[in-house]
Image (cartoon, rainbow over all chains, first blue to last red; front, side):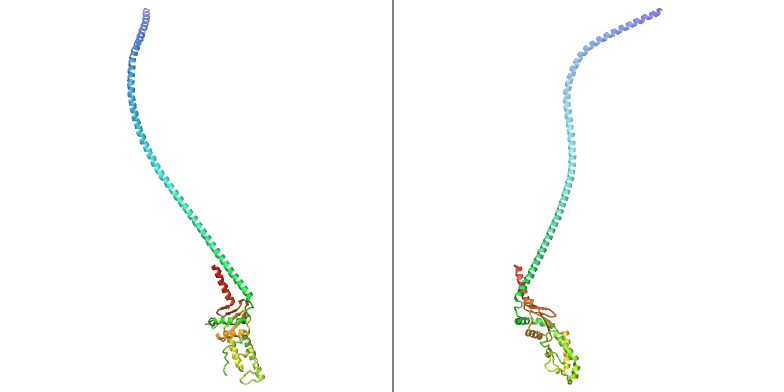
Length: 202
Length: 159
């Protein structure tokens, strides 16, 4: 029993001592922490200052570096950009030249074809027109010649008819055949050689 | 007995129809020869003075003729019908005998056996047209006037 009782006391004490110890630890911790806070604050200020300083330096340094880096990057980028731009421009230029040549060739071919076709059409049209006018001229000349011939023939015929009618009417019967003896024999005499050859079949 | 020779056609005989008439008469005479000989007792020489020759026949003979002469003439006229040249003369009117004779004479001087056919065409106005087998020779006034009108036309065409 005693042992049990002893045990029970021991455990309570133990427990209290632990609590005390824990309390002490808490106090210590709190104090420490407060102290550390003080220290920390002081150190922090210093550090802040240093940090600020460093940061200022860093900032300055970084600014320079950044500027340099930026400049380098810019230069690199610019260089790269320029080279790519140049490359693209060249490519574009080549492509344009190639296409331009093609387009120019196509255009020239089309233009040549168009000109040829136009000239051909103009030539055909001109030939047709010239041929048409030539035909018209020939027909007109033929028509004029025909009309002229007809007119001349009509005049010839009519004049002969008029003259003969007039002469027949005016002279017929008025010239006595016996009065023509001399005239007829004279005419025969003038053609004697011809008539002689004809009737003698010479 | 010499054979009768027709040296030239008499100027009274102008055209072919007269020749045919003569041939007809001769044929008729020859067919009646026997009758004449029998009835009239024609002499040996055979003169046919017993019969009166038609006017157109008289020009062939200047003297008495025998039946043989007539027969010879018939043969020669027969030949003439086949071979005689013919000239057609166109006049503006009917010619009188004088003109006919002159024309015949003129042509017979060129060929003693030529026969003429005279036709009338008033449209020739004057002169004559001589047509032979070979050609037609226009000696008419119409031809002269046509030439004149032709020249006149030529002048008008050139104007």
